[in-house]
Length: 177
Image (cartoon, rainbow, N blue to C red; front, side):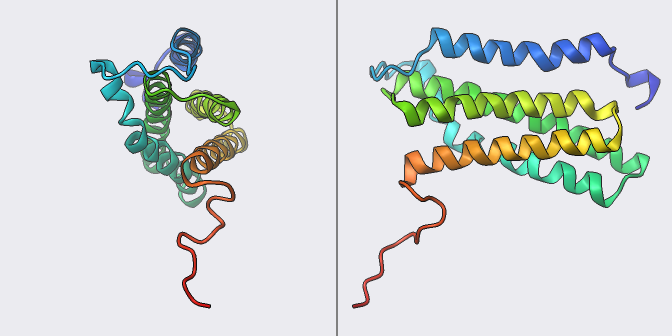
């Protein structure tokens, strides 16, 4: 990274930690306790969780691919930007998920698992962004950990929406006898 655009280590640490602490606070102040609170203007933003959740999945899957395929300085600029986009989009998806769960009457153990997995994904994506100036092996380990976190969050959310055994079960029941 050029000196002109370098971010101080402490500022990077703050930018990696503070948004995720806000997620934990949001989870505490906006619990998913089964009460329907909509329609409120803010509840409309929560509905975008279903759209926003696809961005961190894509970004977090692509980052280590770029890391592995091309490790030149020019490629690293793109990798840093994708990694930052992955962290920001994971945080946005988790924030929207908290709002969605709070205002639309969701509750249960599956939701709690998905909630913690989403926040964990945001944390790992932020750690991945923070570790961009570490060794290549450290970056890859953290990036693959972020992928595991996002896949677990996606799986637990997919099972809530599409039923148990998602995505391994067929989309439609066979009509042949």
